[in-house]
Amino acid sequence: MEDALALSDAVRGTTSPNPPVGAVILDAHGHRVGAGATQPPPGPHAEVVALREAGRRARGGTAVVTLEPCAHHGRTPPCTRALLDAGVAAVRFAVPDPHPAASGGGEVLRAAGMDVEAGSLADEVAAGPLRAWLHRERTGRPHVTWKYAATLDGRVAAADGTSRWISGPVSRAEVHAIRAAADAVVVGTGTVLADDPWLTVRGDDGALAARQPLRVVVGTRGIPGGARVLDSAAETIVLDSHDPDEVLAVLGDRGVVDVLLEGGPTLAGAFVAGRRVDRLLAYVAPALLGAGAVALGPAGVSTVTEAHRWRVETATMSGEDVRISAVPVTG
Ligand code: AOF
Ligand code: ZN
Image 1 (cartoon, rainbow, N blue to C red):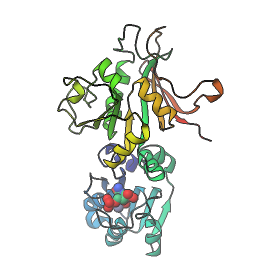
Image 2 (cartoon, rainbow, N blue to C red):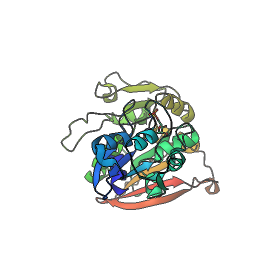
Image 3 (cartoon, rainbow, N blue to C red):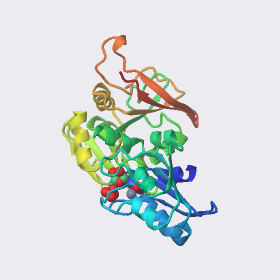
Image 4 (cartoon, helix red, strand yellow):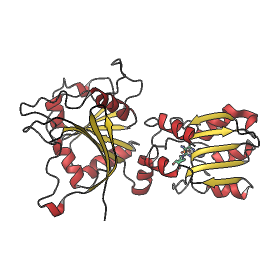
């Protein structure tokens, strides 16, 4: 399952609106004979890719998949059928498929006499590569990660507006990997006017990645025609509404599942106030500025008992910075 998890991680950002799934086929002796991940729609599901590689060696073997094999005819035929046709004897999957049409694959396979077990690495898969898609299935909305880099005193720019660079090189490189896994990168017009960000995915050598997330600019302030975010390196849409639910509805209709919100403070404040940040990813640099813009603008809080509370999932070093991943405390 570790291998299947790594395979699914590698295709994040390329499969939406489908989930990024990984699959490994073991032959009857337990040797790995096939591996695959979900292909961009309308391409095949992970199991089918892995079974093609395994061929006849799958007979009597085991399929290890991060998501319950689908039982439905969607864009592609059911994976349950492909597994049965290949003569696979056992299936291990991490997370049950909550999608109303696709779910029930485990039962279908069990009823056909297969040895089926669920739950291996379920927490890791659900909090990792399938997090955004599971959220979308549950709520109907894309999943939003708010990412920012700030000093120890919470500032994202100095008094004169300069912000390059608050976080260190390790954190800045990581941001490109995080963007690459997202379907859309969202900023406010204030950020475009202040920083003129490019919002593209680049490699270590600065070269543009082949696949780029959708760039989304939100706000009513006009942005100059020469803004870098409007160039041809990736698709860009400009939305007038500041209402998080309207923004997410437009993105959801375009098949976006995984959203990376990159600022600035006004837009982030609107999303936090509307409880539409599902995960916070903060890079905190060991620096102090004492003045300058802070990461978050007004977020509907006037007294401390109204504070938005978060639960820290992980706090790890990122070069010299501290990387904090947190989720909202609900209820
Ligand atoms: C799997 N393996 O690799 C994926 C699955 O429209 P379709 O045919 O592409 O089906 C989409 C649904 O299938 C999706 O909502 C989810 O429930 C499941 N995705 N299932 O067996 C895979 N990506
Ligand atoms: Zn399938």
